[in-house]
Structure formats: C-alpha cells, structure tokens
Length: 504
Image 1 (tube, helix red, strand yellow):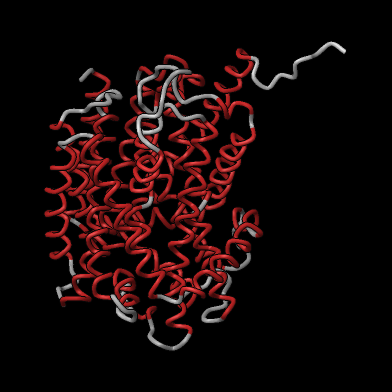
Image 2: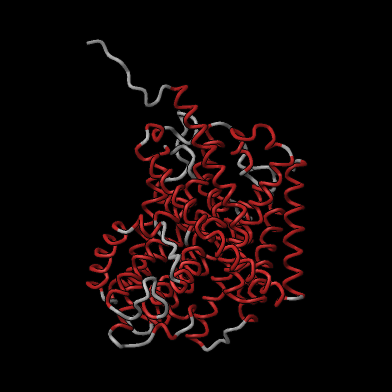
C-alpha cells in the first residue's frame, strides 16, 4: 500500500473508532447530537437535496439521447466481463437488496395508513398516493444517484486509466491537486459516507431478521438479539469476502436474484393478483405524470407535509447519496466494456421497473388487507410488517422463511461488496485489496452498525446517514461537472455530434 492509501485508511479508521467509542460509552449523547444535526440539515438543506438529485437525474437521462452515449466505458475493443443477467443481479443486490425487503410492505402501508404524503390517510386515493411516492423514492432518481457515481468512475478508470478513486475523477477540475492533500480529504469523506451508508443498511437487515424471528418464534426483539445476528452474519460475509469478486459476490448475487424471484412469485400468485396488476399499471402512469412536481416538492407553507418530506424524501436522497460511493465503485467495477447508453438504460430503468413490481406486489397486498378490514398491518412494528402480510396468505410460513434467508444473503452480499469497495478506496484504488484490509473493514462495518443500533435504534441509523451524506453530495456534484467537461472535450476531439457537410 502506498502512502496516500495509508493516510486515507488510518484517518478513516481513527474517525470511525472515535464514533464507535463515543456511541458505546455515551450512547444517548450520540443519538442526541446526530438528531440535532439531522433536523438542522433537513430543515436548512432540504431544498438543496431536491435540486441536486433532480439535476443529476436530468444529466443521466441526457446521456440516453446524446451522441456521447455510444462511447464505451473502456477501450474500443473491451468486452463486458459479466453476462447481462449476472450484471443486473450484481448491481441490484448491491444497490437495493435489504432495503427492498425491509421497506417492501412497510413504506406503502405507512403512507396509506399512518402518515400520507398528501394528508389523506386511509382513503382509496391514499393507496394510489402511497404507491406513487414509493416509486418516486425507489425509482429513477435513486438509481441516477448510483448511476452518476458509477458512470464517472467507470469512464475515468477504464477509458482514461485513472485509479478507481473518487478523487481521481476530479482531475479535470482540480488537476494534479487530487494526488495531494485535497485528494486524500475527498477520499476520506467518501470512505466515511460509505461506512455509514452500508452500516445503516446492515442495521436494517439485522432488525428485520430479528423481527421475523420474533414474529414467527417469539424471539425477543432487542439489541442483544441483533448483536448476535450481526456477529453471525459478520463471520459469514468475511468468509465470502475472502473468496474474491468472481466467486463469492457473483455466486451470492445470483442466489439473491433466485430467492427474490421465488418470494415475488409466491406473493404475486397467492396475493390479490388482479389488484396488484391494476395498481401497478395505474400508479406507473401517475408516477410519470407527477414526476416533475414530486421532484421539487417542498411544501413551504404546510409544516406537517414538510415534516413528511424531511422524514421520507430527504431521508431517502441522503441514504442513496451515502451509499453512492460504495454502490458506484462496485457497479463501475462490474460494468467495464459497456457503452454509456447501455449503462444508463441498465442501471436506471431495469432495477426501477423491478422495484415498482416488487412494491406493487408486497405493498399492494399489505394495503389491500388493511383496506378490506382483514388485519391492521400498520399496527405492527416496521420490521414485522412483511411477516404480518405473509401470515394472511397461503404458504405464508414458507414465504417468511424464504424472506429471512433472502435478507441474510442480501446482508452478506452488501457487507461483502462493502468490504471489497472500502478495501479499494483505502489501498489507492487497487482492484485486488488484500484479505487483511477487507477483514478490517468488515469488522468496522459491523461495529459501526452495532453502535448506531445501541445508541438509538433505527432512528439513530437514519440520523447519522443524513449527516454523512451532506459533504459527499458536494463531491458528487463536482464529479458530475467533471464528467460532463471531460465528455465534451472527448466528443470535440473525436468529432462526435458534428453535422458533416455534404456536397450538393
């Protein structure tokens, strides 16, 4: 490891160790501090999150129609390393995995029965609004955040030979300063955002596994149970991490997709199938129709609706931004040889459509049960809602077991991918970080997740993530400018997009 990699590694580890010690010794203080910072950021910078995420989405969509879309993420003769199905499975597992299972029923039922994005709770319209905003949070905007970071990294790494570091992508703006102190600071912020983002997701996974075990077998729903779950899964994902990208992560990603498809088919077939199809079709239309309005919605004159936006939309944009260095580096690593246009189509639209079908099936079933008065899913703890839905349908027990296995494999894949990416980021962009580095980051991810759960549960996870995302959002904006600048220069050099004059 060179000097730059060492500095990024040791400073990042030192900062995270301070967080872990602080949270373990005075957990209430950590929860209080992060909560205060989260409220300030959501209130003062909510408008900023909405604007930057929407602008990034517009840039990604522009590449679909731009002539530069035919440029390869690599040299002209480079071929994709992975087949399309494996590529989709890997980016999907890394990008949304646990979150889809955790929020698949919990978010739509909350928007319908607990706190509506439009203020109308428990109505027919609330069902449609719930799905429209769930699509908004998990759709094109979310994947554009991942996509822009991955696209920038893949373009500079595979086409221009830069190291796979966030700082290296800013060379068109800052020049050789990215090789010095400025570059180290940028990479440290990226590492910290990544750890908090991945640790938050691991915390969600542990809580939902605990919720499933509690609902099915009466296991206590508490921190001690979550501690043992994280400890067991840590051992499993470290075994997987030691096998490398082409074995452990590839095999687990394909297993995830198989289990997810099985779980989806069970719910789709035994659930209210016709209602699911009708709901999906209708709300896709309203989502597209209202996309611009939702993208900039701040409700400046309504405190209740503004609170809802802070708690949901701003939270999600921060979550995706915090996860973007990790997911971006990983997606970039597995996307070599694809054109920019193919990349944008694959990363923005395929996972979004799959996610919409997922939420229509699981969220639609949950809302239908409550709407028809069969059972009150909204009364269950967030982490138990999925299992509460399964209990009302045939094959419910079997589906619950499959769901817990799926959460576990998503958990392992996310942590495995996270250790690989963090290893890359702290070894100056090495594509083959050593097992010792990956082991170090695996332990740190688990410790961070545990201390955040210990200090304040799910709310502490959410607060810390919103805080960590703010500085990286600035870096992400600069990365987008750097990409556009470099692509414009290359297009000019290659004569791409010029109208050739012909003799008449």
